[in-house]
Image (cartoon, rainbow, N blue to C red; front, top):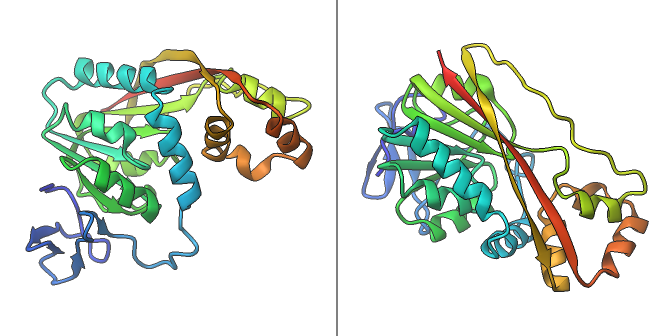
Length: 267
């Protein structure tokens, strides 16, 4: 059982006993039957619900197809290279746990945090050798300096929080879409698609180590798989109707996956 969760009310360390997390000030949080704990407090859940069930279902179908396995393998290789003796890892914005399940094979204590209860519920069912909590990356329910590594894959970036929870010398791996990510899909959805911006950000308290590019081309041969890709992306919210109409007529689609993994070390 993880020893890195902190109380979202008073910030004291949480201890787990009989499936209840409790802090020294007696704030209590019961573990759900699936095994996760909800540590998102102080805000209405409707304001911060994260990915809904459809997005979680679509992402699960897509990722279980292995289309992003090269990315997962690359992150795991970098973790073994830079944090060979790491004990505790935080997957910030863990989603449904596809990546977390792989990280948990490398670290003694792996923790996933996501603001979507639907995603965390699924992650808890998928990965039994990791601990999960519903929470915001901007207010992580994680103790100070408790993690040897933080991975943030396509999730909101909160460098101040990552700095706080990382031990001195710990590593942050920040995965972002590279310029040509999902280019073929974008060409169908938009009349004037543009490449993703490529830039290097410097964050206070971190040393920038470098970046690694990784990617692959995959083919989706069914309407169900094409729809799963579309509905797991932000495009599902901001695609014009004519773009959705064009995509609805596509029966097979080869797509470029293009990623950049930025590596930072806490000074």
